[in-house]
Amino acid sequence: MEIKSKIQVAILGATGSVGQKFISLLSDHAWFEIAEVAASERSAGKLYKQAVNWILSTPLPDEVANLEVKECEPNLKSKIVFSGLDSGVAGPIEENFAKNGYIVISNSKNHRMDRDVPLLVPEINADHLELIKTQNYNGGCIVTNPNCSTIGMVISLKPLYDNFGLEEVNVVTMQALSGAGYPGVASLDIIDNIIPYISGEEPKLESEPLKILGHFRQNHIQDEEIKISAQCNRVAVIDGHLECVQVKLKKKATKEEIIKIWKDFSAEPQKYNLPSAPLRPIYYFYEDKYPQPRIHRDIDKGMAVSIGRLREDKLFDYKFVVLSHNTNRGAAGGAILCAELMKAKGYI
Ligand code: NAP
Image (cartoon, rainbow, N blue to C red; front, top):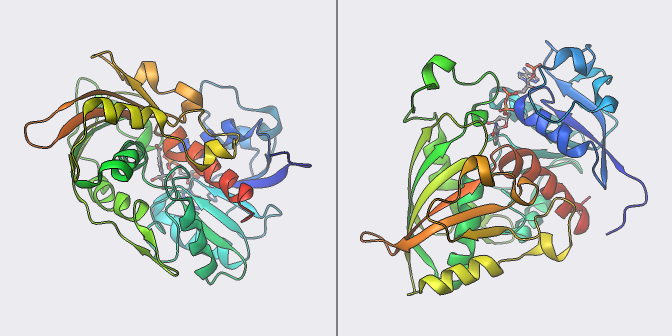
């Protein structure tokens, strides 16, 4: 799809870990250009380069470095706002923007489970965007991106769900440090260590996939009924969440059939050839030692999910390992893909 002139966008929470990823990914985007950045009153009024502690390995883009950081008030000229706001403040700020006519695409948890808000993974539930029409926001709207661990897992589950049905899922995650924002977990807590708890994470992994795989019913999503059990751990990896998943299927499937449907999986982002869409949403590795965060997290623009170690399981039917990039596919990249899908389908 060709865009005549780029669409101006703003980033709320632009100084944070997800905000920086938004800037890096949008700085040379085919359809969008960063017109405004906003953050807390601690940063507002400063130049972005003075307010931010830039932690990415890609350089801070010149055109953003000298933007003045604004307050998160709905007086911005950009009608599309990406939110990487701290969840302690995101709820009312995002709602205020939507009520004032802005299209808000958020990474924060606050509105994910609202009855009228799509919890969007473009490869899975593009039809849920119709929920926007039931929102009462004066022309504005809120669309959300799932939790970073949910995204990787649910992309691996979608082809299984479509082809064989899913009864039960058990998942144990090993989640990267960048998922805790910056400065995140204290070094003395995580070096030589694993922390077997991430606040609020397990309930999200157990509930969000049910909405994502759920069915659009005019004004709400009817959740899918799958039993999911999750245990989440923080490990000393910078980027990339690894997840050990066990599944019980409704219909019998062979290992070869499962690998084939993963490899063949393709959906609307690929059909529309969206700028941030991976060529293939899923890469399967046959080597026993793969996937690994450091080696595979950046595959296909950091937007693909890597899977390996598929084998039969004595308790469930199958078990496997999933890897996805938490700030890219799991946050900023995923949200940008949502905006691209909205543009391609005429919601923007
Ligand atoms: P972070 O590094 O702590 O950044 C938080 C951002 O929110 C900063 O820009 C901060 O601005 C801004 N902020 C804080 N208080 C504010 C206020 N009162 N008013 C306006 N802005 C305020 O957090 P993060 O890791 O980027 O995460 C951002 C959101 O995305 C969270 O809701 C998180 O749960 C979600 N998320 C994160 C990941 C991940 O992998 N990191 C993945 C998926 C979803 P200042 O710099 O001015 O304080």
